[in-house]
Image (cartoon, rainbow, N blue to C red; front, top):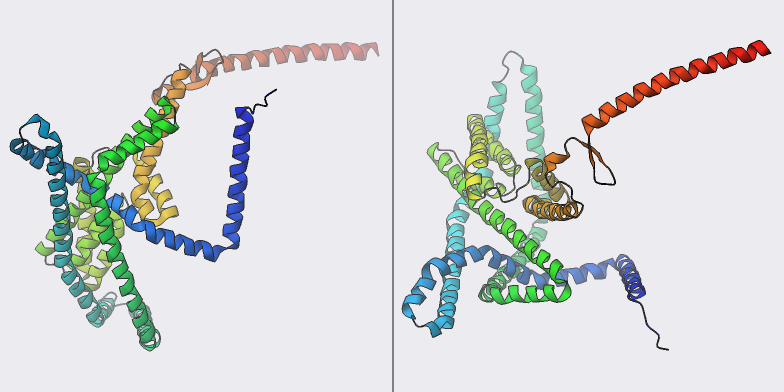
Length: 450
């Protein structure tokens, strides 16, 4: 007789083996934390160019599609008109499209850095060198606050003097004596910067290969999905992948464009009204605007403080301008560029930003909303499928006044249940009164007999 292993026990054994292996691995990680960190740094350093290469390819793909669809595919059709030249037309449009995409990206990157970095450096140098003048201005402003009550000005000036003296003491006692260590750290920072530059170059090269072979990579992923899962589950996974691509692609690219527009508007406003540090503050406002909801306020707080140091009127005017700009962005610019791609309420977006920022910092605040939108869509899809199987209503509004659903599928509304319950309560009270009166009569007769 041939011995046969049932699939049920085989599955249980495989799960038990995986759980035991994970427990042993977790114990090893706890006991050898230094080796784990060293291995993690090696893996992250090795995989970082690949990860950034895929990210660059994903972000540059809309530009490549634009060049292919509207520029080089029609041009290739005019150059090679025969039907048997389809492969040549595709290779030409893809190759020239990738070349133009990378040139466009490098022009934007290098040109932006060339225009921004000198002005940003000059703004920082001016901010540091003019710090004593700003301190004297703040002292004069505090003196003029309450001429009739000099005690308030006295305490504020004492606080300013303490902060200023502590800053000078830190500079003289901590920074200047440790210049050799600072030089070493700067040198290591330069080496790290060179490594980062090399990783960026490798990432750009990898992104070129990814954009050139993007259809093949997508086909390989589909092939793996259909080989590992049933047809129904594989179709659901592929539909979910398309939805994730739609949400992430539209949100991230739209948010980058939106933040660039907000930064340009802020720069134009500051140049028109002749505010100082226009480039520095515009970069802060534009970069922080990528974070939904909290981004404009995160960028407005340090920017307003910088302008308040220069002139308190400038700081107040800028704070009012940022509030108006945030409303314009949230109600006009953002909906036009991004639209309702997330398809979730503002409450859930706020929840996703707080949770993502709490666990993963700034990247979590940026990607928390689209991640939660994808998770929300997946849960909604599963819920819809389960409700359809039970022949229950799919609209959320249909459950507002539902109290309970019986085993036979009959729906009981809250008002009906309340009325039935009240009738039963009155019947129970009336029956209780009759019962108590009968019990009193029986007790009286029993006492008489005794």
